Length: 162
Image (cartoon, rainbow, N blue to C red; front, side, top):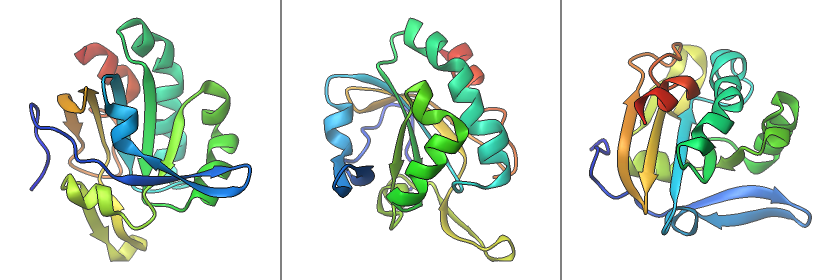
């Protein structure tokens, strides 16, 4: 079942690359008592993800902060090594976006945002979406009908919805 507005996001263990290697991040710790924006996408280094989705949140980060967003989190079904390199290559790290790897896609499946597109080599990936959660409760949610489109889920669109 796909998560809906008004529902509470499940917790989940994500991965980041720390000084000592991969480190776990409990998503519930990021959500508890906070207002955060989360966007999910099919994969690091893929076309629209790199040229449109991440850049839209880099551009919108200050406007989101002005609307009370305390952290902007990108979640992708990738390992923490790829997410770290991609964050540096796209400028997301410098912009202060939090890039979390849901390596097994467990959290993405739990919120009903998983999809598979074998012709493109995308197996068990994330749909393209954005949401705002306050204390873990979904307040705004936008899901693209196609993973090749970034309009409803773009950073600027999320600013407009707040």
